[in-house]
Length: 223
Image 1: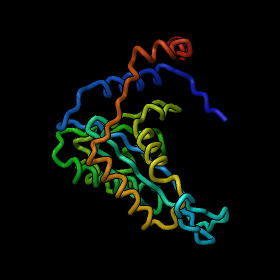
Image 2 (image 1 turned 120 degrees about the vertical axis):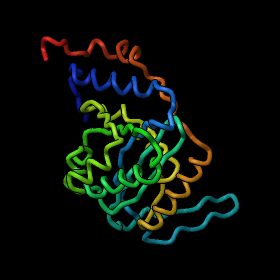
Image 3 (image 1 turned 90 degrees about the vertical axis):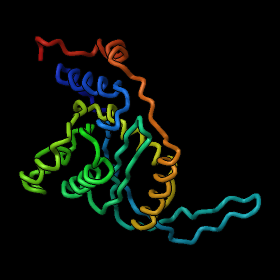
Image 4 (image 1 turned 30 degrees about the vertical axis):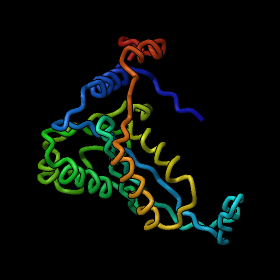
C-alpha cells in the first residue's frame, strides 16, 4: 500500500531547505544531525539452535518465543561518520526528549548551533520538550537548536532512515531475545562504525528534485 502525498508549495519549501542544508560543508560548530526511531520485536528460540560445524551452518528451528517489543532511537551526523543509538522500552515523548537532551548536553555540548532533522511523528515537536521539561528548562536546552522538518510523507529526506537500514541489515537480521542483549549488539555495531567513521554520501540535489519530481508539483495558485 502506498501513501501518495501532494507535492505542494510547503512540500517543496521543506525539501529545498533540507537539500540546501545537506549541501553545506561539514562544520563542528554547526553539526547536522538526523534522528529517527525503529520499533523492534524481541524474539527468542523455543529450541536451542544446533551450532555451526565444519561444512555445516548453524541450524535454527522455525518456532520462536515472543518477548515483547522495544525501541531504538538513532541519531547520525552523516558527514562526520558519527552515530548514537539508544535502546529504550518505549517510544514516548519523554524517551525522545531524554535522548535529544543527552545528545545536546554530552555528544554535542561544544557545538554553537545544532541542526536537528526530524520527520513529522507526534513526539518530534518543540511542545513535547515543554511538556516534559517545563517551558523554562526546554527553552534553555533548545537555545542552540534549529529544527528542520521533512515534508509530510517524505521521510526519505531524513538520512537517519539510511542509517537504520544499515543497522537492520548488519545487526538486527537475527533473533534477539532481550533488551540487554540488543543493547550489547547495538553498542558493538555503533562503536565499530564510529571508529571507521562510516559516512553517508548524499548526492540528491535541488536540481535532481526538480528534474525527477517537477511534473508532480502542485502549482501555487491551486494550493
